[in-house]
Length: 223
Image 1 (cartoon, rainbow, N blue to C red):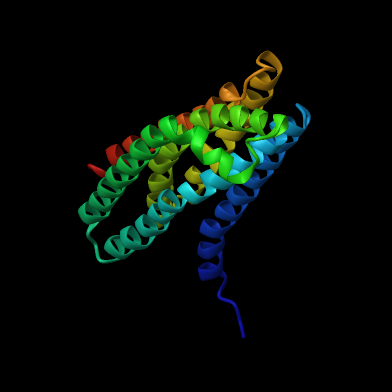
Image 2 (cartoon, one colour; image 1 turned 90 degrees about the vertical axis):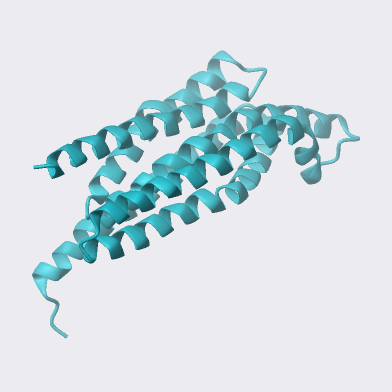
């Protein structure tokens, strides 16, 4: 068993940024949970419930990331750059459509979804339902924006530019997600809606970075 350094280096150049990206995402979720826990028991319970619901909704955007990464890489390997970009386009359409439906549905059904995880007949349960509904209505927008930048992440990994994916996630966490959640918790102690919107705003920044990077890469390919 003798590792080939050039091949191993190419694998690590793609894999290490992805691993670091996933690690930072988990750290950001931990920090947001800490912020919510400091607000009180009801707030912490509401955030925990919404995180479980959102993680279920994120199955589709996450699958789009994997699908774009695999299909785009296959087409690029076959010299079909146009097909790779078409894969990205259609995946974004699917992700945006799914995210838009989820956003509209949750705006109406949030007060009915949260009670599945708590007792609405108690005072604390009613408070958790109220706070969870607020947080979910803001957070569900992340399902729309994240679907877009997930697709771009899959494409960047397929072309060997996973560093871009890592960069946009890092900027989102450092500039918007964590500081936004902290500011929202400090400035709006009676509602969780701004905290949910802060998470979605982080994904919106990621979309902007991804689109900018994609346009720059496409411009370099034209000559």
